[in-house]
Image (cartoon, rainbow, N blue to C red; front, top):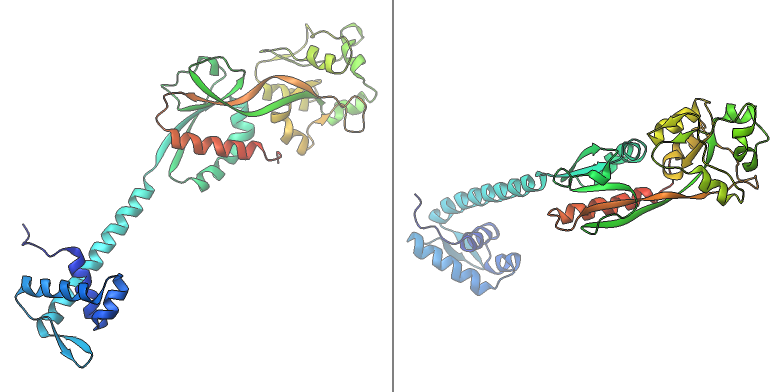
Length: 311
């Protein structure tokens, strides 16, 4: 299709020498010697069968054939450079999709409001987000990495601790105003009081008994009262003045910041007590994962957002 073309380095040497009209300066620009420039020019003259330069004093001036060829070579090199730059840009634009599974509560409170930060830092990665309550049943054929709340359960998966949690009682400001003199002992005795205090319950695991123990009193898990299977629904019920919720620290920050909820026992109270949560947040991924670089970037970013105070 094409006649035998000279090597690219020969054309670059010729273009620089033609533009600068000086073999030495052309060599300096290309980081090669004057002799190498002369060699490339002689090779091109032999290939074309035409004299391309003639000396005038200290300058090497293009002949008529040289002027014709230099213009075409310059245009060709510019076109080639443009094509290569476009190809590199297109390569950078090519994205990789990383499939992430999380609990709905973590996605709603932490992840989704901050995903724009990840996309800004890593435009080559797209997050495909799915939420599930049953991460322990997650098929990693459908996800590359998960944020898992709980404990390590499988030797076939990689786990990386993202965040430990604590729990503490919260309620709405209005509820607290109606019950200004509560103590942990009052809460523990609430099933036997009239009317009993509404201690909101989480369906998937208990927590009140652990908090009572951290407070140094004996108290049992409430056996009656509203029951919620989503921790955000639990917090929403408390914000709607329906009772006292045992809040997980990772999920309640925005509620405390905007004043919809308050700690039942604040920093000035001797009962300002945190209890360890029943689980922690982990990044979890298969040991034979293919997208290891993308997974590492997401893990690093997750650490960065979980290390920041909630706003």
